[in-house]
Length: 145
Length: 145
DNA sequence: TATTGTTATACTCTATAACTATA
DNA sequence: TATAGTTATAGAGTATAACAATA
Image (tube, rainbow over all chains, first blue to last red; front, side, top):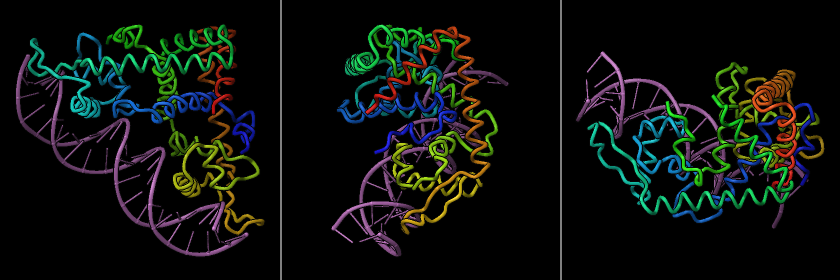
């Protein structure tokens, strides 16, 4: 198989292609493994549920999706036993979302697995250079509108 | 609005979240602009069509999707006038995909727009540090299985 | 009136399976 | 037989619109 980048003229390569490759590598890792029956999207939504609980609408903002879509994922994650929903004592409209121990466990396992992927990347480019990469990545992401 | 990362415990943050933010910024840029009626996915597929032309099956491998899905995008891009398909003189089964001038133009415009996004990121973290980031990103992506 | 969350619906993207036509 | 490409179908992910319940 020809190497992908050889097919693309240098002046047409761009950063989205490279970011896509990294993102895809993570996706392939997760779908090839057993994650309590959860898909990457479930893990993503669950990862933004804070210890103190959160409303579906606010969770949707953090995850970056509509409250309708977010509500669907929450329902599925309640069914799988990774999240629970309880009424907010201060506001009868709100359903407060929290993680169960199973949800906590999967979320921590994901963070550990991602750290493992990062060690693989660091091995490719060197620890020191990877640390710089990671720090700059965080700063760019933090400046994200 | 609360800052997203403040809601996530430090030991549960991971690299997929950060990469997702960058990826999303690019997506938001493209969907908020006019791109000849093309969506980001169209631009992505078209970006892997080399000057010499390519078969749909081979293009699918480069893009990282099935030949069925790839064929659908090619059909749409032919309809919009960004790609043309001609028979391969050497193999009657193959339909050789090439970009039209409109396809070339959109592809070059995308590369320029991505470079512009990168200049914005470089301004956030400094030119020198961004260059390092970008170089390491390429190396990690190149080592991608 | 405004907001939370739901249900209903549809579109995009991608995958698998089954088929055709060429090799 | 094997490969290129198609058509058919379905599922994942996400969006908009309309609604019910609560503020």
